[in-house]
Image 1 (cartoon, rainbow, N blue to C red):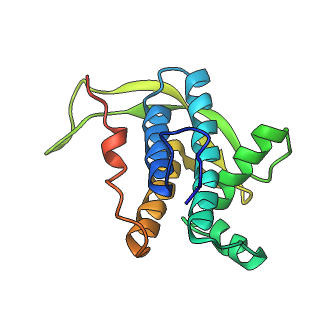
Image 2 (cartoon, rainbow, N blue to C red):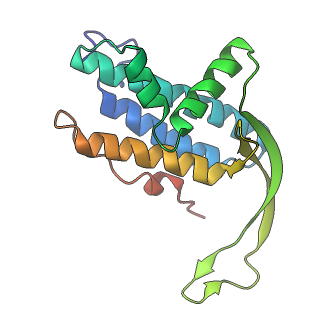
Image 3 (cartoon, helix red, strand yellow):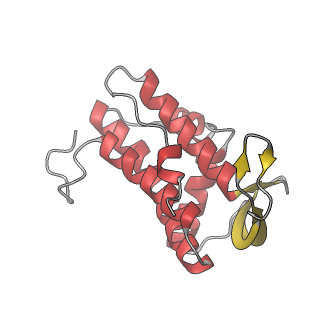
Length: 171
């Protein structure tokens, strides 16, 4: 654990994980690309920071093999997320990138899409180094699920709440 955290509300890895989930919710629920970009950047930085908090809480130094294994989690999206954070902080060229798109959102009921609930919004998708794309929600979901599993499997940590609770919109 950090002896004296720079921001008092962040005392343990769990606090950073919950911040990550809040950033996921803010990213997903943003109403414009600028806000969405701000929160996506914070989400990516927080995910990498969480790795460092977990290592420090265990008194472990991550070696190259550890970092390569970590980058491969969530189908390689931990590494993509870290690259986005570093590229945005240091203005680097990435193998993966973030691009804008327009997506259709629809409310689902017991019989599928609810008529009249469709709406469109500007959003992001992640373009992987392979050229394949992953939409923003799936990117966030896979990363958060991998962190949930990491905490569930770690005897030193208590399980996290479901990240989906942070994505729900309350209108």
